[in-house]
Image (cartoon, rainbow, N blue to C red; front, top):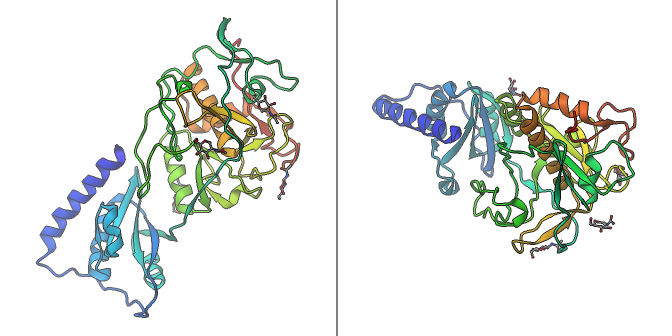
Length: 370
Ligand SMILES: *[C@@H]1O[C@H](CO)[C@@H](O)[C@H](O)[C@H]1NC(C)=O
Ligand SMILES: *[C@@H]1O[C@H](CO)[C@@H](O)[C@H](O)[C@H]1NC(C)=O
Ligand SMILES: *[C@@H]1O[C@H](CO)[C@@H](O)[C@H](O)[C@H]1NC(C)=O
Ligand SMILES: *[C@@H]1O[C@H](CO)[C@@H](O)[C@H](O)[C@H]1NC(C)=O
C-alpha cells in the first residue's frame, strides 16, 4: 500500500505541476537523439529519488513526448510510461529506441537504464501425488512434533542423518508472522494452509493469482531488481529467493544475486548433495532440501503434490525465518542472516559447493528446547 500511495502522491503532484506549466514552454535543452528508425524496446529507468522524478517527467514530456500513466493497458501506445516505487527506490518502465535509452541513461536524475527482461519461472519437476494426512502433533516440551514427517522436514530439525521420522518445531510455530509469496499463485483453500493463506494482487498482464503450485519467479541478472530487493531489505523485510534451477552460478540471476537477500540452493533430500539442477556459487546463502518435496497442491483442497526445485527449497528457509520471528521476535534482516548462519550445519553439503566454502550452510530450525 505504501507503493500505491506514493504513486498517487507523485501523480497528483505531477498533475498539479503540469497544470501550472502548460502555458509556459518547458525550458529544457532537449538532447538530440539520432532520428534513425530503430525499433522501440521496453526499458526500465531507475531514478535517483522520488524528489527528482517530477523534473524528469517534465523532461520526458518536453523531449520525448511521453507522459506518465499508471494504466499498464495504455503502455501499448508507446507514449506513456508506468512508475513503480518503494521507499526511496523509484523506477519507471517505458518504450524507447536504444539511442533514446542511451540519452536517458545520461540524463539528470537517472541512475541507470536497463532493458526489460523476461522473468522465468523456476518450474519444478515432479509428479503430483495424493497422500493421506501425515502424522499428528503432540506436545513435547515447548516444541510440537509431527510424526511420520516427510524427509525434507525431518531433515531440517537435526544436524545430521539418520532421519528419525519426526519433525520437531517450536510450539509458537509461525504465529503472528506474515509471509508474502511472490510466485505463480496458490490454491488458498487447500487444507494444508489451515485457512491462513490469502491472495495478494496479481502483478503481470493477464495473470491470474490462482495458478500453479508455487513456482518462484526470477530471471537474468538485473541491477534494478537487485537494487529494489536490497531496498526492501533495508526497509526491514526479510527477502528469501530461490537460487534458480539452471545448475549455474546464482550470481548471474536476480533477485537471487541481491547481496542482502537470502538466496537458497537446493539439496538432494536424501543425501545433502547439491541437487543436479540447483544454481550454486557465492551468491547462494544457504542450502535446504529441494528434491521430492511433497506439499499442498492446487487441484483439490486436499491435494498434495510432489516437486523438485529451488522453489521447493526456498520455502523451507522462509518458514524457518517465520519460526524464528515467532519464537524470538523480529530482528533486522542482517541479524536474521546471522541467526540462520548460527543455526545452520556447516560444511556438510557436497556436490557443487566445497566443504570449506563459507556458504556451505545447511538449514536447521531453532531448537525449541533451548
Ligand atoms: C499437477 O496437477 C496440476 C493440476 O491438476 C497439473 O496442471 C500439473 O500439470 C500437474 N503437474 C505434474 C508435474 O504432473
Ligand atoms: C519421496 O517422498 C515420498 C514421501 O515422503 C517417499 O515415500 C519416497 O520414498 C521419496 N522418494 C524418493 C526417491 O526419495
Ligand atoms: C541502488 O543503486 C544505487 C545506484 O547505484 C546505489 O547508490 C544504492 O546504494 C543502491 N541501493 C541499494 C539498496 O542497493
Ligand atoms: C554441478 O553443476 C554442473 C553444471 O556446472 C551440473 O551439470 C551438475 O549436475 C551439478 N552437480 C551437482 C551434484 O549438483
